[in-house]
Length: 526
Image (cartoon, rainbow, N blue to C red; front, side):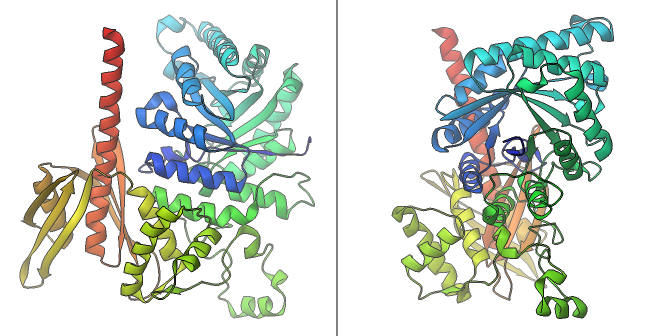
């Protein structure tokens, strides 16, 4: 048991905090189901108090996914109550509370005199907050985790005092985050070793680490922490997260598996689900995986050099330290076409990690046949796109009903759009500086809006002249960004769908805020 490493996946919380990586409730639920297949030990589903959408997503995941579900909360009763309510239906739940501990954070976040006039007084306030929050969370939930934010830059003696206090209050897990990705592997490992010596009650809790990748050392720091006594790693699929991201789940897991001669540890991860998890997260968040990314990149198992190819043909061990099959990387592309039936489609979708009902299959099969008529051959990546599209665009407020574009070197680009807004049809036309701009202008005229567009990206998802194109559009509303995704063999149509998808996410967010506000007002009146 002492060599078992628990994998705490925070893709749906810290990972979603990547700029532009906003996920709707249904996308988060689909990823959570895939994380369950991957067999992570804990799924941190979100930060319930931060928004109505976060609360509803955590609540839905807690009710449907049979894993330990964690929810984040700051060190106060209001946050903890929100987390507990969101986790109410979870089979196994964990409240994860945190407060800052480094001098940088204490002076920056708790600079007001109400927290104490001097640094020493403020530190005492933090200690009390840590104790009180863990104690309160423990009164609601048996499984409580405490995090000392920016532990990587926290004085070791004060950090030891904070961790002792949290365990004394009842914390089952104590997390030592390198929040800013500042430490080096040897330094971080030594910090974990020192805590094991300085904290007298450390044997009553599991030591966890949460490393960021600002210096590209998140995985190395996590492994160094394991070697010095940490037994839980907090990480994300594809290493996504704030700024430069988090420790990459797949890299940590496979490092332990491949180098088990030196790293005498084990995880419960079903490694053959790694590739499916990577593709699902990348597709929903719109954060592309770099080609040379370890384990899951397109080039991870590709060999172009003649010397490498010759060596591989003679013995795979010459240049591969793991097989692609071990991480679920497809050896061959399975092709489906217009004559393929529902059964063949369902079997292939299951192999790709999707479990769908017969009713859902009818919807997906229709999209599949429409694409097959255009493309003739439908590849695995096409199927992933179809599935992602059907989940991302669920319960949409705006839907593209018709699109017609005129463009050419000797004409002014003009677009006509017909949009179904709930049960109402809106139709407008407009010109623009290019066909995409004309489409966006027509959409804005039809809906009577003017929207700030932060970014527009387009890429080919599959290969060939009839490739599926994916467009990512990020819009800004006040302090929030919303990323929309659209796919089609027609890149102009994909652009229109992506823009409407972003607007739908914005609409869903505003509706949830309005609903929550009305409920709060009703409670106040009563």
